[in-house]
Image 1 (cartoon, helix red, strand yellow):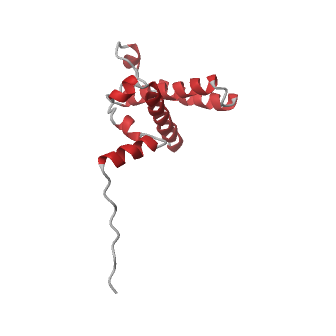
Image 2: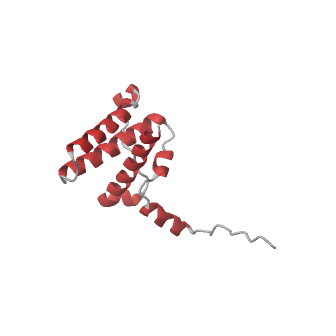
Image 3: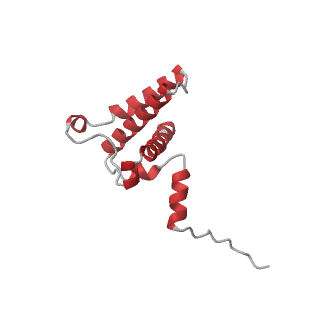
Length: 124
């Protein structure tokens, strides 16, 4: 009996970009930031933005907001003091031109980043 091997399908760049856009978490955005302080700043900002949006929409309980605020503070505490005091922005600057002009795309990317950051905390 001859064994058959199933080969993984090849995906185009467009397929991969579409899958990333649909992903709940975008780890690549954090991986691009090599410095742990930059990653912590990006996480703090992303979690803070999501918490604010959920507060404004009244779409989350006070207990859930407290958890998000605590997670944001954990990442805030990981930002080196020199980085906090520098003129360099803490925000994760995207080189994606769509993020610069489309606030919805930036909001989605922020949400994806927040999800990755929360997952990382959960795994610690």
